[in-house]
Length: 199
Image (cartoon, rainbow, N blue to C red):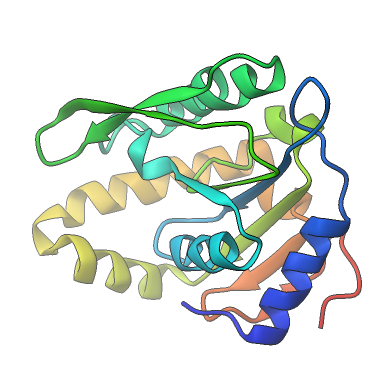
């Protein structure tokens, strides 16, 4: 997925005009890009990272494998968002999916803008420090096709379990309804949510 220049420009404007809420001096604008797997979050986050500019953290580096969705959300809070909020060193240990173990550590410095993308990134607990919550959605069939094209047919069962797990979390968190902006899996605006002025 690649969103249009017009939509990307408006998203950047929303971030820059929004209040910085993360950090002891509220110096960081936190942008959360959430939505079900295969919807296009990573592509959008890459565009935002370049356009803002911003550092980008991928939740895929935080989940400890296919059954680690909840653990990944907890790690986002404990290792990145909470330390940044209180002026401490934020760092996470990347999970290596191929080896099935944790690998090297990565520091996340307190920069003007931080983009976090991935399933569960928009958990309600992060609302007080979030500048913009973006939801990206696509129908299940398209998402599954994208996922299997990337990961291979051998992981179909894992993908199906993941889709069920994320659906449960999204229902509990009401992430889609809480989003400031909703985009479809092709980068078009679906709904403005709490934001306005987006083309």
